[in-house]
Length: 209
Image (cartoon, rainbow, N blue to C red):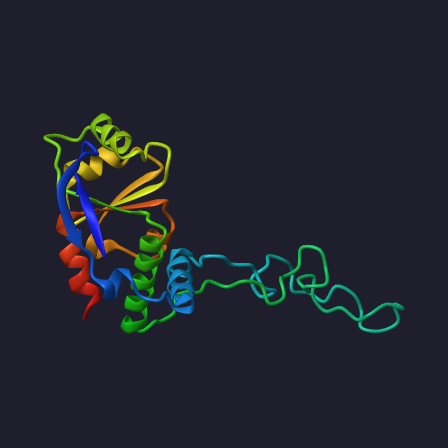
């Protein structure tokens, strides 16, 4: 599929780029997308939750009443989970929520995400640009020129650019990543995907392996 290339002022440069059909025009695999997004979100979880069990609760270890003759159930410890202040039964323990996915499935998920965005006409191809120094106002002007000032957007660079990244860092609705940092979640969790020309070849090369 062909997409016109815009400059950072939002003007048509008169050039067009050919996006690979094998990356941007496949039949999306929804289950692969689901698994990749699920893995990404699982990896964000710290897994540091912890409840004290009866062996960890502070309290006396003496037998709190005699075994027989009280007319009530026998009880051997104040730390019994049945009592207020006692331990927790089957409480959460620190754990990792991460799980493994094959590289082929993750590539399929990213290609599916790109294809979904292409089908929605939510992909913008922008010529490479840079700022002389970090300046949020300059980045906002780029967003306005592209009509993205009130939309969630993701800018994908071919290589790390400190000035562009720092210029966007204060803006909640806009993120800047390099092509190697892309995830299926990031692609789908945005209204518009802005691909800089320098990133296209790297994206297609990485996903065509």
